[in-house]
Image 1: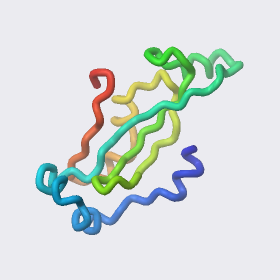
Image 2: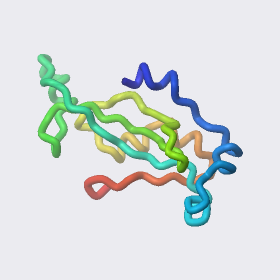
Image 3: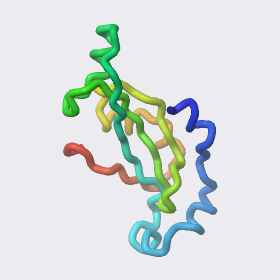
Length: 116
């Protein structure tokens, strides 16, 4: 999924992003330029034990791949991180993605999941 979508996703120009921000979003969150979210995709159990261990999601009780995405206030997907195994925490994905390097003093919001 990352390999196909990454070619279509571009980080928006900061000025254009701020000029086209929805009025209510600009009023309440003027410095926030991206909402970060993670999601998981289920797949069949891998044959190899290491792959099975890396992709086992402890709270979903299935093998999954996790993706982190960034969404602009306008609702456009502006970032996607390559898939990680289901054991990887959302906090780890957020802290180790290159998205945070793009923000340069602006704010972001991570949707809360499972007390993160």
